[in-house]
Length: 440
Image (cartoon, rainbow, N blue to C red; front, side, top):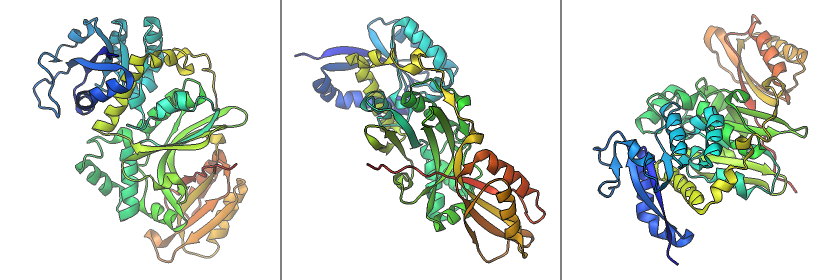
């Protein structure tokens, strides 16, 4: 049987766009044999049509006039790879109005303005596919939409940002300070010239908003997520954590308790060195999902890059061409808003263990004062560690780990500790995340 031809238009012929064209050229025949669909890249629009790319396009395909794509009624699927949330938003709305299904890798756009775009897609009777928006080549969107559809998801834990993971991995291995590792990451192309959205946790939160919406069947807004970045991480705390058997990661966490309350947060987290996520190094991403039927499943792979992300884009194109994506899209709760009234747990009510490092005067009775303050706020000490040596102003670092306690109790204790005359500077506080085991 001859393969059906589906024409595609692409806006944004940068790194990922070039990868999409490369895959369609090199793997097009195999895709046709597997799916019965022949994908034809009929139009590529970009403001730069002179810079050489890793792939050459047939004559007449590349243009700097996006209207050529929009006005071509034979093009069924349009890909948005321009990034940002202003021009990209207008572009996606125009694509939908022109009768095109849309594929995008733009997590910021969907997490911040998805509601308007989803309504426009439903009105146009078209769909928006976004596998490439989360974790590069890892097929986590597909897994949550269909592969794990038989499950009630109770939790997901993820390393979603390769830049942050690269920085923390190299700080851990080399003992080098944050600023120096960040500079090296920028020199090697693992970090942007302006890395703010990566290191402050925003990029990770964008992805969590989308994946948690799929996992828990509701629409998530950025205001629903507590966000802390890694910009203040110090090498002393990474070393102390290693000594106690912990590895520091920037985790995205989505949890649903027995009462149906959702907890969504992004923050530096100490995890046990025996936890699989602790072994996810460098620029790689991973997602650990807990379902009531399947138990714990973990997805691992390249979280960014030309070909990994392009692979996810082409997977979306295939799903749309086969008719699968459109049927799923119109029923997704994050799109239809049928289950939008989620009950979110405030960060103050989150229960966690904590790591504390306090720089204090080296004098008798100091530890008793710490214990008194923590006990006053209902915080039980799990362990303590103090190394020999003297810091600034004749201080020594005291490291304390706690039993599980509420965030608001810890915040109150930290505020009181900082006011003690024996303490110098602001105490460091990092959550210890205990990822559940998959038990029968």
